[in-house]
Length: 310
View 1: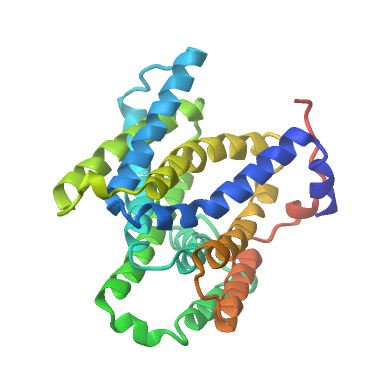
View 2: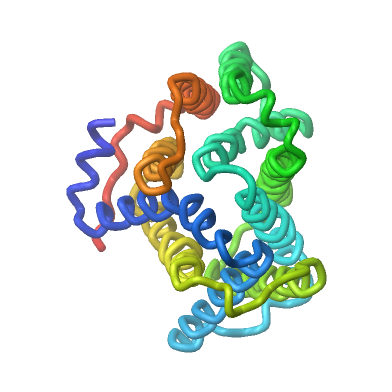
């Protein structure tokens, strides 16, 4: 860890790491604000489509825009369907009835599902340490609903929680698909454009098909601003910052940010949206984050990573 911190003396790397930690830590908060007056499918669809247009401008500026071929397009459509349409879409829908703090905490369980899925198809091995991590996360989930089990009697709330678990399944499936196929991108920005564009178009179609009332006059400036923030920063800026950080430190070290994101998200939900954060909820957060850490622990987290000249 000290070596990771010393690496942050590179100011560009520090800025990239802070961007990822803060922006991704505010994503759930921004979604909650956006869906206050904008239907969820519109929030998700406009977010991805606008992000695609930003990526397109960047690609044209770099003279990198081109056709990626039908085979690669198929990969991008599968990845986009799982990670953006299902995972991001269901998360956005869920936040119409579930708090952003609860959403971020349940979503923090994604690495557990990825691990269990990887074990199921033989990509990873199970061990006593990982068993402890799974049990810790499961204990955290129990604590989440310990005091609010009666809330599940509310159909909208129960459906929101159900959507969150579908979102986790989508995210995990997309991650495992990438691992299993060993997909390596030569131009991540180009692939990302196709992912954003496909998801944006499909989600906007869903918005028009499944949204009963989408009176544009009711969309508040605050919600529109949050939606634009999600597009520009949550989908594009954080992505570039994340991949810049990966060129400077190891993926395992960058993964530490996942734990920071959850803490930031819960704190901001309490501070800005006045969401109630009980002692039980804090204990649940601690157990889940600890469980994810135990499963993903790797000695590389604490090894020195040579910083390449920027």
